[in-house]
Image (cartoon, rainbow, N blue to C red; front, side, top):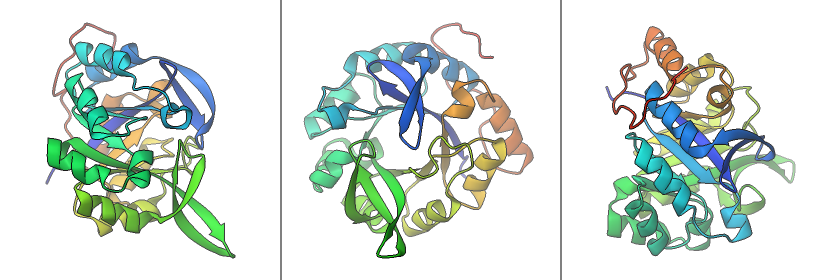
Length: 268
């Protein structure tokens, strides 16, 4: 059985790590490179960081931030936010990213995932989905949002995940906006539905507040990886504590650091 992954997520705004609730009300959570080094030392399987306002503000890519982090850590890096073209993907991959995560641009240009996957390989291309439970004509629907969760679309979450897979995405990151930052747990129903609908890895995001939540989404939710922010950023738990808990619950994880930091840092 493949090991389940634990992935810290750095939401980056103007070069700083921030954390909000349901995509808004952000508070500062530290320096990007320092956070990356800390998680590398703790044995994180990967690190994801998103420039959360790049698409909304139409800003350039955060290449300097990426390069600084890549120079200091060994673990794989996935980067998203403001990626609008195959050339943007190339810039990220050539400056230290192992994977690029595409959200808004994939909705506006549905062929972008396919073009990028053909150029760089599907293992490098992640479709990020900002999903929201909404009421339409008195009926709940799961809809895709773009521009950092500011703009609704007509796309249905499970259908969009399938299209992304068919277009060449090698992985799905499902961030459920209703749960994001609440610490009340992942949306197990939606995560399971997407996981069962596609045959590529699904990374669950949004809502982790307890280690039990990680176990639930990796088992009940059938996710291949759990992405979390608040419980790690503010010192509630370390990556090591999370993995030890999951292992004790029978979830297969990598207990030993796989990469080793390029710098000596305090992992506590």
